[in-house]
Image 1 (tube, rainbow, N blue to C red):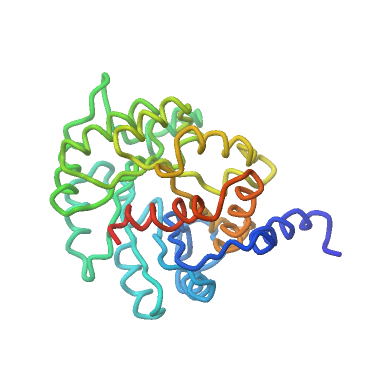
Image 2 (image 1 turned 90 degrees about the vertical axis):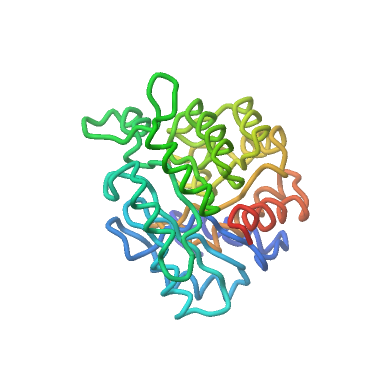
Length: 295
């Protein structure tokens, strides 16, 4: 028997297999990995190899502090047979809301930079939520999207990039979605919409869906000593929003957490236990994230 501290994790990792949900064709849009400036459980090459062995179609490499388009290019050369994509999170390390940084990413060889995240851990909403006394990056002021955000969105619209809303407030998310639509951006996802510090209500998520955005639900929020939600709470929200508007992703890579494919298998098993069918899970884990990346 495994130690008591690991037994629940083992059971969770087995649940996907017990339910028979295949990872073949799955697209994970929330993959943290090394190299990074914070502890990670696996590097980008090794997670690509593991994901390929499990049958995943594609991974979106996310780093809060460095662009990942170049990393995706290199991992593709090392690990053929799985699609790798990257992007840029507009935190302070890249200059915040920096149109020049976004424009430069669009020119990186391969064109594998597909997503721009609005600020995450440096977002004004995150810093205030965490009660930290440090500089932050704003996306709005007095109920209006900032001009520099609109400049970034215009670049994204021309380059056909996808928008992820980052750690913005619910009202900012809805403003960003509307502004993105005005800029010609067709592919939008609200980053882990229910999870703090975002914390969208079901009604706000429904509004986002009506505006044409996907709502992301991450496995990371269901695990650990400080887990944020139960599977039943996720299931009620997904049902209210509609699987056709939702994306399931891992948000894994943190030291001590399950590896991404194991987490996804467990995630799908938990949702099957809540009554979701295979076709619904495939819509949320394969079709919708593939459309977000323009596949």
